[in-house]
Structures are given as structure tokens and as C-alpha cells.
Length: 211
Image (cartoon, rainbow, N blue to C red; front, side, top):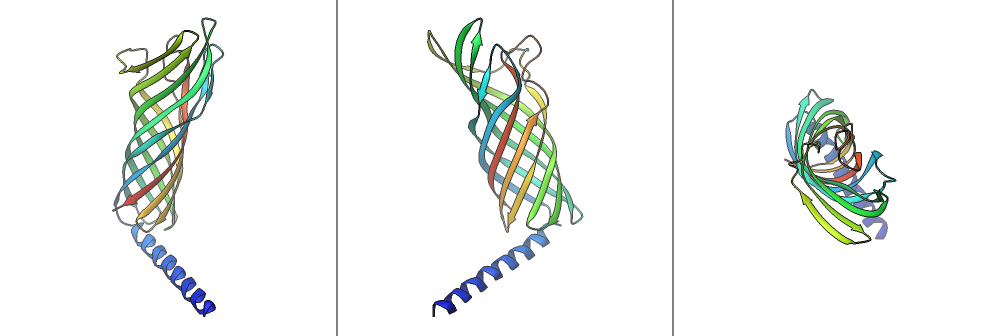
């Protein structure tokens, strides 16, 4: 009886996989709208400052995208996402030690090329435009802790940042599991401003639904 039940269960799983693969094959040629939510593991690189060192930080990402097919195996995927980036760091400013937790809220707009070798897998890569919405810093020094929220009227802050991103989507019928990596190609501030100066980098995992 147990063997019969196991065989029936395996048959149902196999049927589900085959059906799902067939559905994914069909959807490759259709334009679809998708929503995603997940988490960023972000940090910085190419930093410059007085003995500045950064550790990674977790943040929220959420938004939507449009998948536009160009034939069966290629497509384009524009999207718009609210994305939290940042770091937890420490260093010295004018010889005094400090610690800082920074959360930078961005509007990310990627324009990705889709490569669809099979219905189950979509490979994406392309440029990403990021607009800085606001930034929250929590400073800790020998004198105490200070929290600061900036809306960026300072022209020395670079609010428009170009970057590159890429990753893979696993398509399970209407559910989409996505993993991404992204790197800024511009620093957060102009030379001589914004201490510390750096470029953002992040690794991202999302769960999505496509219509």
C-alpha cells in the first residue's frame, strides 16, 4: 500500500512539473506583468574616507516589472522598484572614531535583456538607473548617538546613479523566484564631498507573481 501511495505521489509531482514546464513554454511568447518583494544584502565598494570600513546590511526591495518578448528566446524587462541599500561601518573623521548605520532609499529602474533558453529559466542583465529618495544615518561617537534623515538638497550628493545588474529568474507557473546582483558605476558624491564616498553593491532575492 505504501509503495502504491508513493508511486501515485511521484506521478502527481511529475505531472505537475510537466504541466508547469508546458505553461512556462507558452508564456515565453506572451507579454506579462509581474510584482516582486524580497530582500537586499547590500554593502559598498571602491570607498574612500578616513580609515573607513563597511559591513553588509539587509534592506527591503519591492516593485513591479513588464516582460516583453522578442520572439521565443529573447525579451526585454523594464521595471521599477523601491530598494533599500546601505551598510554598517566605522572609521575616523578628523582623527575621531565613529560608527554609522546608513539606510539609503532608492527608486531603481532596470532595463534588462531577457534570455529564455527554457521556460523554467530566464537570464537577465542590463543597465540600472537609481534615484536617491532619502538617506537615514545613525552616528555613534564618543560624545553619543545622533540620528539624521536627509532629503538631499545638497548638490554635492549624487542623486542620479548609473549601475549594472544581472541575475536569474526561476519560473514556477505564475510564481517567480529571482536572484540578482547589482553594482553602481558612479560614486555617491562628487570629488571633495560626501565622506565617505563609495559605490553601492547588493545581492538580492525576491519572490514574485506574474499575471
